Image 1 (cartoon, helix red, strand yellow):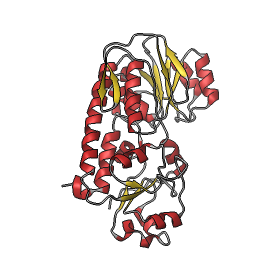
Image 2 (image 1 turned 90 degrees about the vertical axis):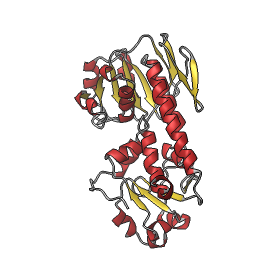
Image 3 (image 1 turned 180 degrees about the horizontal axis):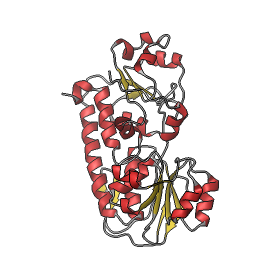
Length: 318
């Protein structure tokens, strides 16, 4: 069982923080293939148009020089693509890499300080889909281009990185990052297929909210040959009842919010295999490990490896 120092944060904030990233279309230079995700190489030919997850076609006229990132994941992507020197604004939650801490803090990803952003005069703002229409419209009125991100699975994250590379004229950097991630992902998935028995998993992101269909966490569990008890729900982030959890009887209980002690004290949970066999795994919110699992960016495969070790320790910790 993993135990870490508890910091009390609201479950709603955790759920909000889990829903962030980007997709696009427009090809520059030559293309290759990274396990199903198209990559690009060479210099971007501007103007270039991408279609974000909000369905908006955004045309970037020239290489961005001043970028505001309103998502910890996109901040990580930009720095991973060696574009950190162009990032002039970031959210208070953008704590990785360390160099990002030197960038101006413009507030939270869902309620940034508009005045601060305008003062920075960005030509590109990369946001989560929690940016309000009002703030988006006001930023666009200043001449800034706004792209929203919301990856639903690992392929979506890889595509986000490729598209960010194209928008920022960092195609070769994006190609290298994505191909490395794709190779590591494939290795994890292949190893997970050797499990003698497929494990049943419950992902608790706070107050029994879980990772349903269309979520990155559900995508990772599928890749890792695990059964997600929330996969058949209609919502991306469904809240399960304790009765449903007991009936589904997960072999592994992964929590990002509730402590193992609280989980074990829940009436009826003493009948769950995960409790009986001491398979409650705790990754506290806003810690290094939790960030890797949650953020749809370059470290997501490292997070996937942590989940793999939690579900199949007999395979991944030998």
